[in-house]
Length: 225
Image 1 (cartoon, rainbow, N blue to C red):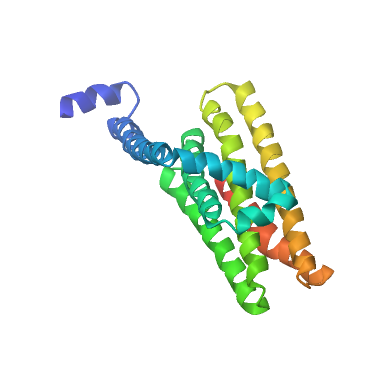
Image 2: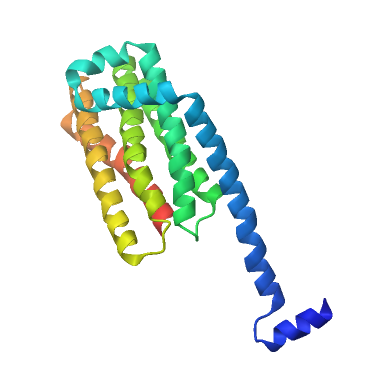
C-alpha cells in the first residue's frame, strides 16, 4: 500500500483523494439505484392507479365542472395521492442524478420538508377557519398540480443527466416553464377557493404569498443552488 501510495503521490494526486472520490459516488449511486428501483416497482404495481390519478389530476386542476365529481370519489382522490407520492420520489431521484452536488438524501429531505410544511399549513388553516371542505379541496388540487408537474418534468430531467450544455440549458428553461405554468394554475384555483370561502382579498393574497409561494421559492433555491 505504501509503495502504491508513493507511486501515486509521484503523479501529483494524493491517493486518499482518489479513493475518496471513487468510493463516495459508488455509495451514492447505489442508494440512488435502490430508491429508483423501489419507485419503479411501485409504479408497476400501482399502474392503474397512476393512470387514473393523472387523469383525475388533470380534471381537478383544469376542469371545474369535473372537480366536484373527482373530489367526492374517494378512489379517484386516493389515486391522485398515490400518483403524487410515486412521481415525487421518481422526480427527486432524477434531480439527485442530474445535480451531482446534491446527494439523494438531501433532495428527498428538501422535498419532504416542503410538502410536510404545506400539509401542516393547510391543516392549520382548516382548523382556524373551519372551512374543512374548502381546504380539503385545496389539498387535492395541490396534489394534482404537483403530480402533473412531476409527470411532465420527469422525462426532461432524466434527459438532462446527459452532459451536453445545450440540453441542460433547454431542460432548465423547460422545467421553469412547466413549474410556473402548473403552479400558476394551482394558485389561481386556490385563490378562487379562498375568495369563495369568505376570505378577504388581503387575506387571500397574504396566504398565497407567505404560505404558498415563499416555501416553494425556498425549496427551489435549495435544490438548484
